[in-house]
Length: 161
Image (cartoon, rainbow, N blue to C red):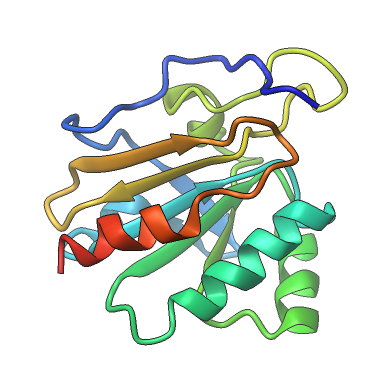
């Protein structure tokens, strides 16, 4: 499946990270601003109920161990689905967030898919944000079913630490 069209434009390196509010798996609310002062890997994708999204979350969960940065995943999944998935998979190094309530990732960040069978979900995009809230790295997967370049994202984070 080729890369989808996004609501766009996507925030790019060198720009301040926009507002991002989300609901965590325990129903509490959080935001990217709550993580200021920390390097952050922000991953957006369609749903934890798809094989590639699940694999991506599991992989970043492993890579985050001892990394010294926060990893936040954002999807349109409801917090119930995120809680079920994280419990079943032992996800404890990735903060799973739902964009369903605020849709900041979808429309403020421009990550909403605007056509096709995944209409209304988020594209597979990875951002790395520095401790001051500036985007330092972005990758849009070449195809929605493709995994991100984990090594490049982790290298971008390590360059900030």
